[in-house]
Length: 425
Image (cartoon, rainbow, N blue to C red):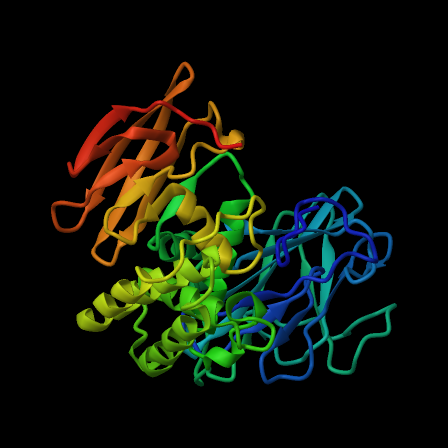
């Protein structure tokens, strides 16, 4: 099982499984829901959870207790699939949010078995185009108001919960987007900020989760963004600045954060101006602040941050282990494209990580300066890597390869080169 909070791999879960809290909602919608590791749903500002139960031909199955539950978060984006084993197949719950009618949480139950089943929901306010069974739950004690729907073999039931932002009117559930459409849309949104295909396959889903959580929660006050984005007590200045930069990269407006951003940058400079070394994440946060300020047309302020940053002690080396909060995005970006204080940027500045040795990789739209992004692919020729790169932004960005090849550099907007190929320890 993955140790990453919020990511559950497709294996059986025990009764003592680590809790998960998947944040579902729409982009800056001002509402969200939480889905736990067994498919229980709690809507923001609604005290009663929506639990589900499956009646198969043998008995009622309670996903909160079954040992055959498996859950996946598709590609790290907020489309959650929870499976429970029943005779001759699975009952599958899919949960995702749509902006239609002011905000709905869609719940699908698919019967992937050879026999008909029934599914019970523990709230009477679920929206459905079908009529629930007039008999209600039979053979199980459920909360008052619970409703039951039959689900034929090979078919899917779709219901929805209205958010507190929802507007009235008739909802045609069959015309709502599908989970596949939502997954594609979310991937487009989070990958707008840049993405990488590297040997460590756990990084992309984690980064996608953090970015999608940020988009969902960005309609709330930043104190409500959560521990992974602003720290457990919403006082992690570095995480806050890194999160702001991710919002900018995904096309969100952050003008209303300008005053706090300026205050945070001043605090970081005061705290570290006499330090003998600078933590790597503070270095990245100051770079992120420059980029955010530049995006807000505060060019002079961005230049002031750069000038002040050059007077600080050198930054520490990156940690070997990937962080689990929003810092992981900066951690990976720093290995791929490292902005230099004096200008320009280095690709593979610290060498080629051993895990990447011999493996083709590529990255897209990694920020190299407030005005530049870099994309490149790495292909191997024996023991040497060849890099094929492309930059966007004003002409003249100087690229080098740091420890990977100290002799190489270029200001060309596109090109290819065979590098020496130092491997990081």
